[in-house]
Image (cartoon, rainbow, N blue to C red; front, side, top):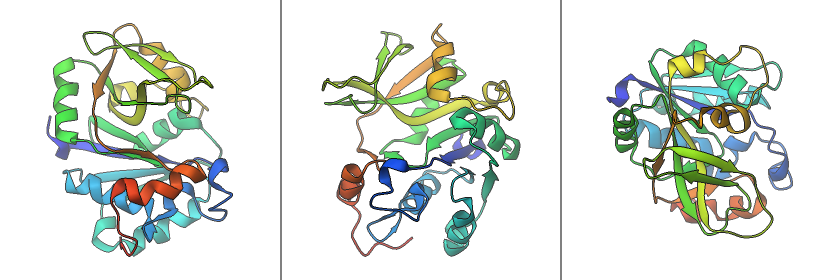
Length: 241
């Protein structure tokens, strides 16, 4: 599968309540990591791997995103913004943003997390699996913050386990997905729906594949993880978009 035909949709509309203690006035994906907005790092990574069209699905503090894109210069080219007037959840925000998509396949990401991933290898695995939906998973020593994903020998997702307070190693959803446009278009319009809690669990009959990667993973959703993000990503403190 050629990545030039894939549109990226970044889900960037969350309220970021846990991070407000340290970043009170900024949309979470725009919080600065190493001196530049975290989202700038993600956009550069996408474009370096061959993704040409990007759509930001925004809600909370949506007015901050157009100036951010303008300041990116050439990096901001072919970046569109989809606005939700009221919270629609990850599924609803994706369905709304899909109306701006030109491709047949969508690379969907959470705007507050990053995993070091070979997107071409991911796309090829998605195509080989013959599935219309594939999620990236990665193994961590403590799944208590994320919940756990169970996978069979054919790399199909068989179960999602809820977050547990006890520390346990296992595979987690890394927040990156490849979805055929037909899957996204089947979602109800203008309804609050969760990809993680409603859509993906409905595909556990063999229609949801998994792609495992061992790259660096960071979720900046808490003050603790936000504090170490630059170190994990190897970003110098004077980095610029």
